Amino acid sequence: MSDELTGDLRPDELHPDELRQDELRQKIDALVTRLPASLVYSLLSEIEGMDSEPTDRVQLVRQYVIEYLNRQRTNRARRLFTNLFEAFLIDDDVLYHSGVSIPGMLQRVDVGALWEALSRDAFPLLAVEAQETLDEMARGDVIDRILRSPVAMVMKERMRVASVKHLDAVLANKKAADELLAGMSRNRPRRTRLMSGFLEKTPHIDLATLRLMHLVLTGAEGPVKPVADRLEDFPASCSSEMEANRLADLLLDATESLRDRCGDDLAAMLPLSVLSVKRNYPVAALYIRQSGVDPGRGDAMTAALTGHFIGVTRALTAALSVILKLNERVPGSAIRPSAKEKARLEALVQRLDQLVHAATSAGLMEDRRSEPAFRNAWTQAAKIIGSRVAAVAMERSAQAAAARRQPVIDHADIVWLDRLLWRWQAMSRDFGFETYDLVKWRETLLEELRANVEKAMKFEDADPLDERMEHLLRINAIAGVFGQRVSAWIPTFSHNMTRLLSHRLERGGELGGDEQAIIDDLVATARTEVGKSRYWKSNELMDLIELSERTRQPG
Image: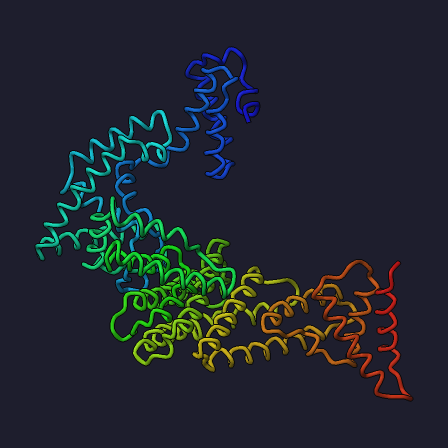
């Protein structure tokens, strides 16, 4: 590491002038930009251990790495304040789509809004003092270390005490509380726009969220710590059902133990944080079932899981509407989701799949009081997905299947969208909310694909055979989403079929997996047909079977 950082520098750079310092800074920036954040910290540790290197050079390199690490962290006083909530903070814009208050939810952007209010009204001078002090300290060390320093800890405690005192007074006065919530809520849309381009309107911050912030601030240096410590015992996922059951038992015991030490409200933060911070839905669901709560009596965990479900279903339809431009789309235009947008949608579908199983596992679908919230959310999403999204997929799939000479520009995206829709249908079936819309949509689409296969198999002697197979493979890619292969739609006694397959087999070279599967299907069908008659054999089919056997023989 030391050679890479210092080996290129000339001896006269031991005391660099301003120009050479800029060159070195650029060199360091270029290096650390290519590294993950964790490795940048490892790099800094290694630099600090370079005792054998010339001191001035090491210090200069160390300084530039620190500057790089601190460059994006300029709101240092705010960061010190939000550290009071760190164990329970989430950055989850999806939950804003629920439109309801979710118990135990502490969004980083909302705590940032609280900071703006308190730094103005509760400790304005301390906020300025903290920022100036941390800026000065950041000249010589990375901000993460500085925030753990004794000086920073003292300032953080002063912020906490002033915040609790101010919120005590605010919460005792309804008018003051309403004004604070209104100010924080006005801040919310601006902050959430930085997180998501799919959120049209954010719900107002409610009194329960403010009380939760007050609760955490009040106990931050006392009873909150055991809750945060126990939260570390729970991972973000489970490797097996047995592991989920073990962790659910552990969560029940830990929550009960915390009630004696920290009180009911703070103890409840543990399971709520396993749900919202860790997002471990299997454990949260088993906790709900095993704790014997009554969903009809406003249980916090039940309400939180329901809020997650509603938020994810609405976020999925909102994202689809924006990405596919459902409201301003020109018929016939290509769909061009970016890789990031695809990843976003796939993550939402994956999360929704987990929530479907969690709602079922928790027993919430068995209770007539809790089930309607899930059904209503799913029904609203199904109206958009089963009609408007499916219509786009049908239109684009038909055009892709009809593209005889070359693929449409969005062929891969069309296959991806069809797969996403069919996964939604599978979840609907698992959840017991399957509708006929997508079943009929699949049947209609497969008929369209079959008609295009028939057209693709009609070609003249002069037509390029490789181009015909490429067309079939494109149709096959769409059909494969639904477990279908085009070979089922090609008649055995088709002269063009034997011509096409013989050409591809005689061509030599390795065939792709999909093409090989199609050829194998058709050759197998040919064998069956040939075997039906003892006295008459089709020469074309016999030649095709023999050619297939020869090409499969090694050497």
